[in-house]
Picture 1 (cartoon, rainbow, N blue to C red):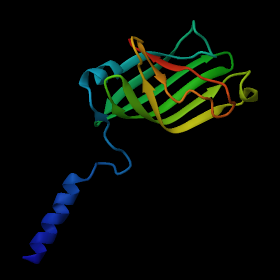
Picture 2: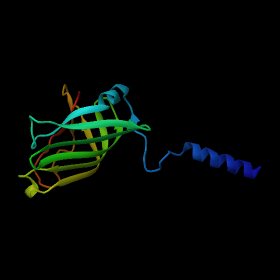
Picture 3: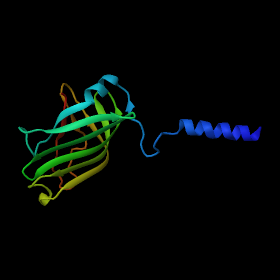
Picture 4: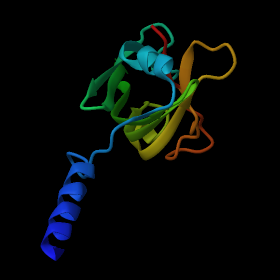
Length: 150
């Protein structure tokens, strides 16, 4: 009888465990917002260009939303790569890396933000803006990293 309980407990633990221990499914609190996120979007950092946008792409695989993107002009750029951890009606939580390089900021050296960050839409805006706007490498510089609705 004891062996049966142990076997059942182990089977239940295996069924409840994620497929990959290091990758957790994206929490979707708003299906419409998820649909808005999926696909290709314009991406911008104001220091790179307001006229020539880059591109960010959101794809879903095994319940996980991933986002990659880049905007570049001359030697300046913004690049992002990571996972969308949570989707809400007007915001999403991103976990990954955003690297910016602007010739007149941080002595022209790349600046990396890494970890959990929030993008949100405020008011009638048609884009998500990175909430953590203060440049961690050259204060008090403010970076507007924007991802636009299609």
